[in-house]
Image (tube, rainbow over the protein chains, first blue to last red):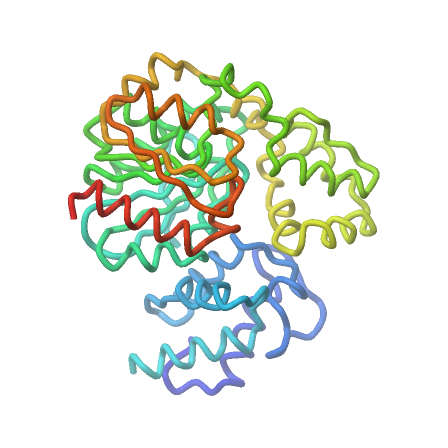
Length: 97
Length: 279
């Protein structure tokens, strides 16, 4: 479970566990903060929707993941790193602690 | 994760916000991520309850082998609407999503308060659009495939596109990535479940939604068409023949406004929803 006191490293490790075997798709290379959700892991946009739902389950609360992803996309970002997802989670959980 | 059992598949949906109901219905070969990651859900959820979902065969919903004509898919809409307890809804339908909205409005009018059709092509109005194969969204896709040595044909034919996908080599995928960009390749990659169904053929069936029936939709309709729409004749027909239809235009786009001009698209949908809702 990821919580308000989780460190960035702990959140990245939890995300790596989640993404390593995502819906039956196994990723064998190391997963770290710079791993790209689309470019490296080969996921599609609907996988990002599912990821948002899974991290809500992991955190035990509703999170505005789609808002965050939309902001990144509208700022010109074409991918999403594990580190960015971890930072988003850490900010959300700290705000709501 | 939000799933709802419908007749013969599990439907994946999300709801955000509070207020009058808005349902966003994506187009053929797309999924609800197009709405969620464009910012439109965030914008609308400040004053509407926004429901998005994956049509059968799309996104994270199940993919029955058959039943992809508008009448069946509109039944899915009605079941979802009923089981989620959605009130009379403003429906924003992109492309085929607009066909679903119009069919649902005819089948059970009380469920639909108004419709925004976003660059929608109707199989029942095919006679108005004899040059659909010239749509830039298809000619661009065909040109990209031709660079790989694969021809998906001049006529819009999703079966031919679906059949081409499994045989693509890594090199061909690299060429497509260079031509279509990463989002284009991600779009192709998520088509798998749909390819094993009758959807490619069904989506072009009028399934009873004839010109005469379309003209019987009595709810207010906004025909929001792209500036370079391939379906201008359809837009003009709707403006002339529907009892309550207003036309609006998204500048700088040619069918995929949410990708080509997301800010312009969201602004116009928001403005027209406010007009429909009397705000």
